[in-house]
Amino acid sequence: MYRYLIIESKQHKQIDDDVVMLFSDLIIPSDLYRDGYQAVLLFEHDPELSFEDVILNVMSDTLTDLRVYVSHHLPSREDRIEHIEITKMYLKQIPFEKYYYLDHKMIVKHFMYHITDSMKRHFLGKFYRDALMIETLKVYLDSNLNMVNAAKKLYIHRNTLIQRIDKFYQLTGFDVRLFLDALLVYHLIQ
Image (cartoon, rainbow, N blue to C red):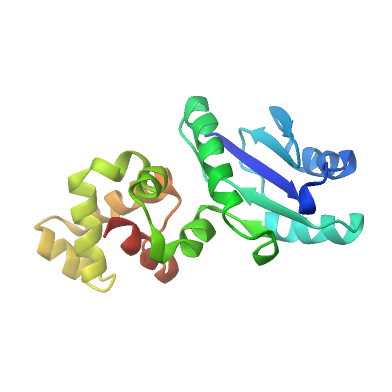
């Protein structure tokens, strides 16, 4: 699985090398590139750390205002490159002061009432046009997150429903068994 970090500096200042090195030591990036006031670190493993805590510590240690976007797992390198460009576009539309830590869920939450088809395509990925998965999610959400009732309405075994929801979670990062994720997915599939 492939992931990436986008580190942004406030007021479009060049990101200090020390900041990039701190993150590089934590995640061991496979690639790094800078784009003006942003640094993108690409990595292929799943570090056992909370990026939200890390960014707070880095900001207090370096006395700089930063914002970090942490991606969810992406299936291929090609997906990651396209995903980075689209994510940068969304980050430009979110005021810097509003968040210091972002992930795909925070972006959907920010744009919840203004979700476009391109956002749906971006965040739902391969499930954007998957009628079976969309119907499964709608029935599950309309059943108030009740597995048994949703499985009955879909005429499938409960374990099949669990497998579909797990697959959706693995590929999108949205766990619809959690209320906030279910709310965001509900807005994405409407």
